[in-house]
Picture 1 (tube, rainbow, N blue to C red):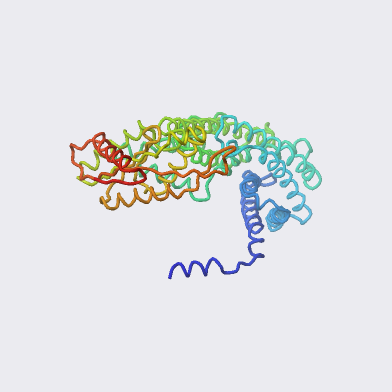
Picture 2 (cartoon, rainbow, N blue to C red):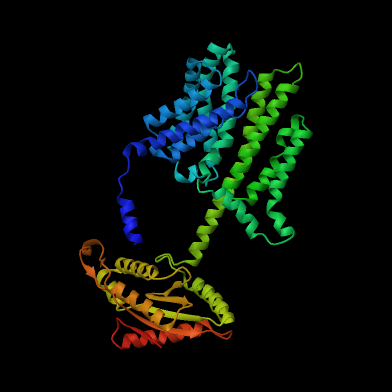
Length: 485
């Protein structure tokens, strides 16, 4: 009955107009909400201290190319204009301000689309540097148009208008773009934060994962209550600590929050507590540039740490997996297999062992070449993997021999798994390579299966040896068969 309902649901007609308008509606809504946030937080007679709309729009368009259409850009323009208009700007001024914002987004998008996936994901040490260059060029583009608009309608000196607008854009792009490019829409950041709590033990170990965050909060309190010209660098040690301890997405999120908090707090302190001899515009420009450059350090460390983690994971995979089939290497299989045997022995649970060998494999190498033989090994490994469960272990012991450990199943179920693998391999469509690409290669296997209730004295080597003897008996009995003790 469920299959019928599912098929009916899948065949139900979809409104193409609704699907076509979904992207522009999302873009317009996000831009409007973020622009309104920026406008409502700006000091009087100044540009917004917080302006996340441009950086987040750039990330949305590069991560969702289907939104990057003429209609999507018009929707973004409408979002900017609507936010400015309802907060008191005239239609023409709103439109020109939107044009300045879109110029920066356009430059950022053109350059971001040239980056590879690793750079977009900040998985290379140079990724933050490239994002810094993109942020600088997009802020120059946006600031050039913004300076003209500011001079025409607000009477701002062109040079100061350019510097003020560009510094604000640069600061916002540098601190927001890494977060916007790496954050997951599936709440990965929240999952990481929850996992830190779940993985912690009791007492001090439960507090330990939060120490970098607590250090960040303490540094922000110092910024608020101590103040002074050195306040801008108070959070740097804590942010570097976060970059070394947390995953890249979490660090980018923390840097984003801290930088936005510093921009908001320090700019408002400058506006309302500025010495008489100091120019407010220059002070704000200097503060914004300082905060942007402050964020680059922790983000670079986090990016290097993420690249190191990926490299270590790749090295670990290469050390523990067979390069040809992707299965566990003999050493890794024995290590994990012994752990499984020990665990099941304590529980006095059942384990089944299946030893598999490809029949007449030497003839395949001699007839079709070693490249084809390697391809056959990979195909057989994939067929075996498809018939196993998540908790099963499979490894390549060497040559054309494979071993499988099946916990918690009966002897009959283990034999059924082995028979299904044998039938699937016998019926697999495997062809030669090169000049023999049209020649089908018929593959068969012989397998030996044993199933035991384990005790604390059980030994993996002995279990494999018993299954190996059965496998050779299957070969002597004519091959292409499964024998079970």
